[in-house]
Amino acid sequence: MAQGRKEALSVQALQFVDATLVYAAFVISAAIRDDLLWILDKWEVWKRGDNTIGLTEMMPLLFVIIPLTPIALEAFGFYRHPLRKRLRDSLIQMAKSLIIVGVVVGALVVFFKLGDITPRLTLGAAVPIAICLVLMRERLVRIFVLHSVRVEDAKEAVIYVGSQESIKEFEASLPSDVLTEYKVVAHYQPSEGTPEEFTSLLKRESVARVIFAPRQTEFGKLAELVEICELQGVEAWISADFIQTQVARPDFDSMGGKPMLVLRSTPELSWALWVKGMIDFLVSAVVLSASIVLIWWWVALFIKIGSPGGPVFFRQKRAGRYGKPFNMWKFRTMHPDAEAQLDGIKESEGNEMSGPVFKLENDPRVFGFGNFLRRTSIDELPQLLNVLRGAMSLVGPRPLPLYEVEQFTKSEHRRRLSVKPGITCLWQVSGRNKITSFDEWVRLDLEYIDNWSLGLDLRILLKTVPAVLIRKGSK
Image 1: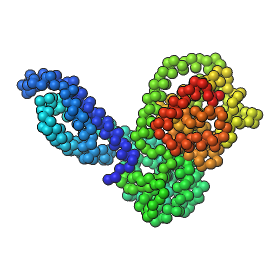
Image 2: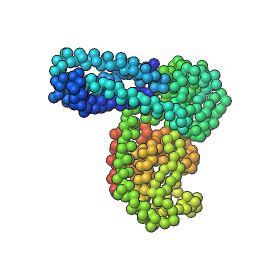
Image 3: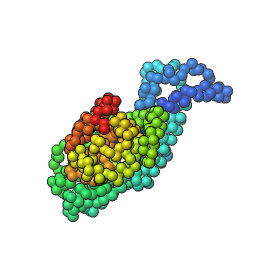
Image 4: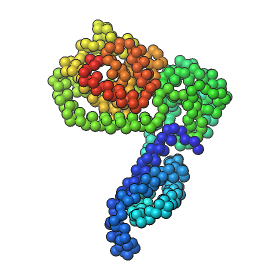
């Protein structure tokens, strides 16, 4: 059965974990080897003939055993259908894999004459330890997957496009465990709705994916709906059963072995995105820990002194990926009634930014110490909490308040919502207060999305440091 990219990436991650567990099994085996030798020698089961041989001498074999084990497991289907597998199935698959690994290791021992330097007790003890560790990992993954399946909020929200008959046929062709991974929040029938209604549906439901299940339909009839998805950065998954002609720049994937045509306008799932997520977590955890100890207490104290009538933190609903709301945290830099004064400030002071976003250099709602926090970007530090929770990234388009997102007038404005929002971005390091056009701001965000790479993230992070230190564009 063909694998989708998301499934393939998950399998690769599990293989990496299992390879690590195999190595851990050998480390444990080597650590308890002397105790095992004592017990076996006492029982006269094993002679103390290889006391001087340890894990180091096994390294040539470990370079083969560690990567080969998860590859063999994958070959026998060990990573497929975690919800439908029984323990008996896992043990059979592991036994078959063990035979393959054993044959390869045995051949290497004979061919390279490694018998005299192979610690057989360490190798023998590592096998049951590795089996136990991998089975425990499989059990934990199963529990996690079942929990994700049962928790509706954790499922990916999708919209179906097509007739009731075509959607039923589509779902009937998919394995049941694939259907449990997402929840259908809406059905849209092109013959009964308008493109405007479809656009409103995407905005209202904040979905990451639209699944097109047409039935004997020409691709041209879906072109307008696909274009709407493309402009908003929402993935369009089209059942490829009906495709007769080649579409420009398509991307093919599969869902439960069923071929799908995917039109992506955002970075596709890859190891690079996984690494980006790991960097976000590790860097934010380190910086957050250090800043809480060194900075947060002083900031909280001076906020209370400078504006005693309000809280230390400012929390506001912002639009996250695909417009899904989340609570963004900052240190408070304005007086407590700042939100209530917004309309009056707009009327009296105007707006220095064109479009739906409000920016004002000398905003009278900001108190004295708040100005310092903004100039030094210290007010942004609590957003590391949002990064740890997965709602934000270190680098990405800045999250906007929900009421500003609702005022978007162009579809390309919403495409900036197709990736996680970030603490810093191209707009931040390009002298943000010098940019007064929201269209130019969006252009920089879309340039980031269309050209995303780990290298680009690193360059933006490196540019952010001097931008903060010299207070470039920070007001």
